[in-house]
Image 1 (cartoon, rainbow, N blue to C red):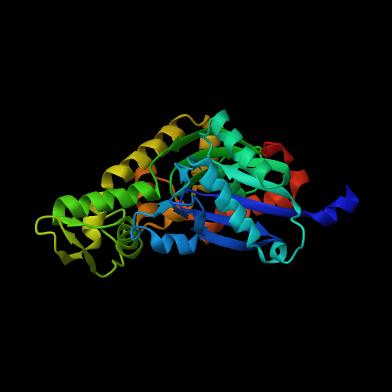
Image 2 (image 1 turned 45 degrees about the vertical axis):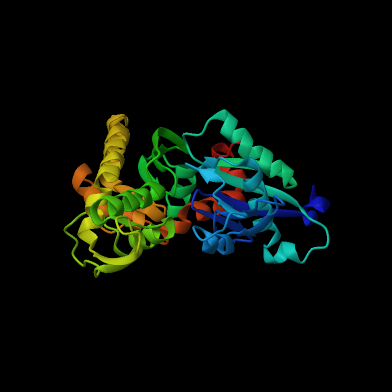
Length: 342
């Protein structure tokens, strides 16, 4: 293999519903929204990532923006393949090469994925000139990224709230003992906010605006210690059809998100109730770790802590915890061989 190693590039991919992150040479080289814009007349992809996300909700009939991943899995095979190809091509050190190198990849996947969906991920990797493909479950990658030693005979609980799914898992001895994957995450929070603005304020807002509201004043409880300021939101009045502006507080958003967060709480309790007693004792001592963009929702850690009576810790840089773990697994392939699906 030695000589051919020169032609092989190692990349770790966190193929997320909302964002795709790629690690190459131990650094995050791509961190981009998982979205493409396609010209309807020619069928060509005209923009990917950040450029395409700026077009979202603002296109005319000849341009269509597509989010190729839904609930953490590939929904549009062709668009996702072209999107990953573009991202890989734009990695600085690969861009410089005359010939496309062969790739060794570690890709993370949701724990509730089916065999067919696994094959879709593998097939798109093969089409991109990948010679070695390894898959890793998201909660496992998140646990490695958070800094947990997954090889130890000790139970750890990890909650990874992404864009499409929330992955909850209890990990011990490099394996997932019990897990729960629910389709309640960042995207559903955004939809809840859009629905709330429509029903309570008669204001029609787009996905991009709802996302902005979630980031600026999103909250999981109404009793925050340091509440964010109220936000002015612009959209279309549903009654008059005119553009209008309303003022929204974090308390309203906490109300809007309440039902979805209750579903996450129930899933966490369900996972805890099926945990073997020895591991439950470990979790009592170590607490619960949270990763993923959704874990940054204000007050969510406090709310889960109240529900479970356990300490809840948010990973540093939670958005990149999963890709960090995927990168570590790629770097130390031999050590993590048992957790990778080849």
